Amino acid sequence: MQRARPAEPDSWTSVGTPGSLAGPGPFGVTAGATELVVVRAADGLRAYEGRCPHQGALLAEGAVEGDALVCRNHHWRFDVGTGRRRGGEGCLRACPLEIRGDAVLARPGAIFREDAAPARLRTVEDLSGPPGLPLLGAPRALDLRSLHLTLERWARRYGPAFRLSLAGRSVVALSDPQVVQRVLRERPGAFRRLGEIEPVFRELGLLGVFSAEGVEWRPLRRLTVEALAPVHLRAFYPALREVAGRLHQRWTVAADAGRTVEVEEDFKRFTVDLTTRLAFGHDLDTLEQGEDVLQRRLELVFPGINRRLFAVFPLWRHVKLPAERRLERAVAEVLGVLRGFLGETRARLAADASRAARPETFLEAMVLARDEAGRPFTDGQILGNAIQILLGGEDTTALTLSWAVHELCDRPDVVAALQEEADRVLEGEAVPADFEAVARLEIAGAVANETMRLRPVAPLLLLDANEDVVLGDLSLRRGQTVALLLRPAAVDGRNFGEPWAFRPERWLSPGPGLAHEPSAHVPFGSGPRLCPGRSLALVEMRVGLATLLGSFTPERVGTRDEVRERFAFTMGPEGLRVRLRRRS
Image 1 (tube, rainbow, N blue to C red):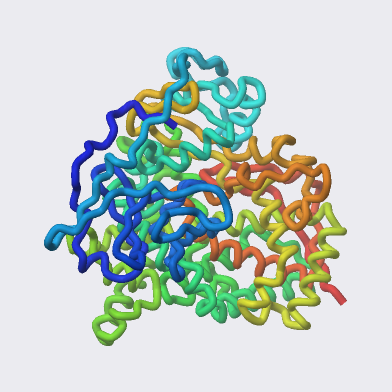
Image 2: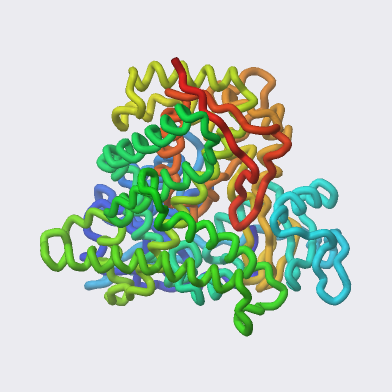
């Protein structure tokens, strides 16, 4: 990627003090517009480019293990003294660093480089694309509930880069995996989320780590990554096991009664109970109580946000139609529940001062945290971030598990393999006994990966360019909206053999002649804004599948073709119903 902007000035910039950079690191700092990671080598501090050269992850979110800086995403290891990668090609670019008095200074201009641009650049106007309707400019036959399918169909027709008009704005759709990776790596600098996202979330009181940008995003991201770090999952597992046990009991009752199961609803109850336990320290128990507290409200939020984002005119800001009033009531009720959690959290912290040194929940960490100016977060910021964590933790994992059930209903051989694995690992228990047992559920992990490849619950990502940018031979102006299509590369025969077949074994041993390119598969995104809940989601998926297949065999009610993809900010199965048959 080339940026149409001057390089960083070759001058020294303060990035902290010796006290703020004490210890091994890694420390994330910024010098001008350049992100750096600072680590401590044997002879003093070192500064390197802040993003992993593999997929652009923030290296400050990794760890220092001995004399190696380890990337959190794919565990690439770099020598803290030289920046050289261990076990492969590549080297981090070093940034000069000096300590002058009580200031640590960096010279970012020494590492900034401009890649050579192609001799001839295309502009947006040079791209082909579908015709629009007069005046509104909206593409013909555009249905928001199947928006992702429409864009994927146009990508097959017009190629990996095409233009369209969507909700009155110019959009460039991109599906080439290398270009998609480059865009994701350059967030939040060169690209940000769609400009409408922040005001839509803000006016609903939902501004948090997902929708925040710039200086607001960084502290929220840091807190979220720390709260959802893999190191905490082992300690959290007993609570996860308890909730999975409730799910198993719910399914047992349904199976014995011969009742049809709405698996999406059950999985959403499962994930919302887990998220509220982990993030808020509160047991909602939506799986066992008769009347659901949050799920019915939450299921209105994503469709409502989707509707507002793609509206040609923001009518709700002038006239509230019934659907908009329902959305705002739902958000207000969810925020009311979370406000109660926040009050309980503040009371616990006030009653026990020692908890400040060891916050046990995401909400406690948010209350205790301070922004870059040393100020506490407001209740609005805390609640907005909390509801985004709740939405993200509930919807995406539950939908992936639901799609997995849909695919498994047509693959009795995969079901048999999962059941054999569950019998071996669970050893007669209804739920995996401990964190180590979850790690042995390799086939369940492969099913989760294959499901996310074929049925990505976030198939479409809309971003705006913060500056003039060149992507390959395509020149984009500041403010240009791009739509990243994440599925086409994952179902391209050049990247995955038998691309439209549900073949979980490809994630265990691809086999001769079966193409397998994992970099074309980015279900959790990539770059600095990689989903912070990735590790938790993968554990939940393995546990959910083992709990289901260890005791039951799912059978779809109706035909495969009756289940449709439904896009409402996330993509879920519409019309999926199953019956569960108890295993002997």
